[in-house]
Amino acid sequence: MTGPGHDWRAAVLAREAGRLAGNRLWRLETPGGPVLQKYYCQKAGPLRTAWRAAWTRWIRGATSPRAVERWRTEREMLALWGAAGIAVPRDRTAEFPHLAGERVAILEWIEGRDLARLLAAGGLPRPERDAVLCRFGAAWGGRQRLAMERGDPRFAQVHGSLVHYLVSGERMVCIDHEQAYFPGRPVLPALAREAASCLRSLAKCGDPETFRRDLAAVAAGHPDRALLRSLAEAVSRLPFAGRGKRALGAALAEAAGSPS
Image (cartoon, rainbow, N blue to C red):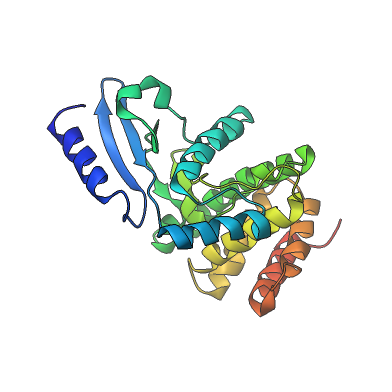
């Protein structure tokens, strides 16, 4: 694990660390099975990164996009979400200190496929598609309810997308926790921004009729219809909502149904 391959990666990162456009991920084999080595890279130059950090902090109320801050935030969020019983990758950095370091984390390797690609492939019969979307709705809705009960926006994902859910057997594992909302921020608007992003992601997985049926399956699995209706209204009222977000909010409201 510290042989030529590892030395080669270290040399590449040392040479290109200032100009890599995205994170670097490697599967590493260990005596205890595979792990994921994740190197957090700068995604822009110093001036643009500084501007994005200020905008993210003061406008969105979220942590910095700087690489070192994303590295710290993800490990903090994995610990927070995992302690709350949410399915996330385990942080295994402490088990492999020789493979980790500043801006390098060692995470659980998860076999599976992200939900967006699984749905977009179109190979799932409708009963199986509904079943996996119902499981997503249960996991997604359970976390939303937890965020509202605790009054903690850190349980809302800053970059919501079906790409950030891995379907691994019966597990629905949420990934990408590199940024987080600050405690004390309003919870429902944060959940609404995540919901709008997830709905846009779902809408790309099929035609309008497929989207309507998919959303019904998500709503069927959601554990709190009242919260789902509140989310639908909040999505429609997001700043700069426009017709797109209003349409998504209306679709979610239709899927949630009227109060019983």
